[in-house]
Amino acid sequence: MKTKLLFGIVLLCQLANAQTSWTKYAGNPVLRRDTIIANLPNDLIVISDCWVIKEDTTYKMWYTAGGINYPADTLLRSRICYATSVDGINWIKYSGNPVLDVSYTGGWDSLGVETVSILIDSLAPPTEKYKMWYAGQYFNSYRYDIGYAYSADGINWTKHTNPVLQVGASSEW
Image (cartoon, rainbow, N blue to C red; front, side, top):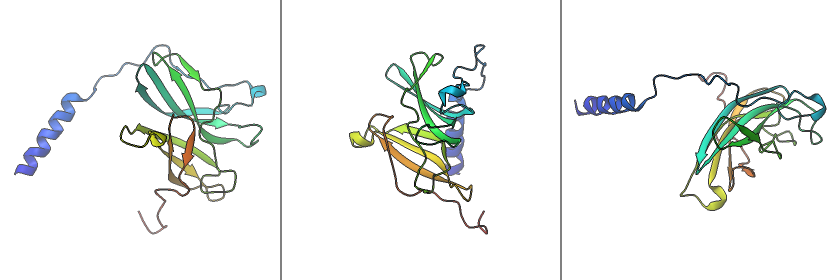
């Protein structure tokens, strides 16, 4: 009985604090891909899967970009890029994008990195203040696994060598 009561109280608190009504911003989209092919942009094909954190007075966005990272690469791949804003509407893309790139050595995330989640860990060492989890895609098998990276500034990332969560065997759910 206590478990049911506790669950009910937790659920009620979550519902009381949940946003239930949303209005789309009339000026959407607030971030657009670069469509000028001559720029060979990281986001030529698509931008999606954003993750936004407000730190102090700055909104920080990491997002999936599909395009070319020339001259390092001439293939269309997904990469993780970064932008900032003071109001959450007008965004400035980081000139050094992408902030997380594919593995060019044929590793487990050699086809693409995308679908990012980030948190700020105030208890971590300063070099690991930002923690990122992302989907990495194998070049030859087209499967996704989850990777981990950390950063002191949210821009310069150090990848964990191997995926932290992998797809199971074909017989597993």
